[in-house]
Length: 94
Image (cartoon, rainbow, N blue to C red; front, side, top):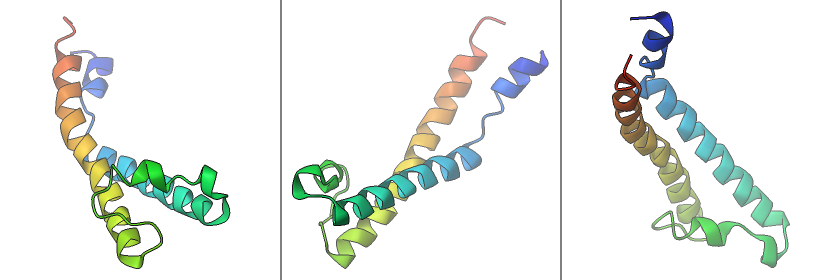
């Protein structure tokens, strides 16, 4: 097994889960912050609402639910993506 194949197959769920979760969390916070200063026609909460069950614009509980769900989506993606990636990276014929 070459070094490149070994590196390719070493994608780990933990670091990817944290990275994706923080990416989504930061994106969520930026969108909420932007929504507080932008005109109604440019606010992003309409895009988040269908993706985050329980999210309500401008309520503290809705904001917290959005934070938790944005973070959990990152872990969901990592948990599904890493095994799929490993499977397809390992079956490239080398």
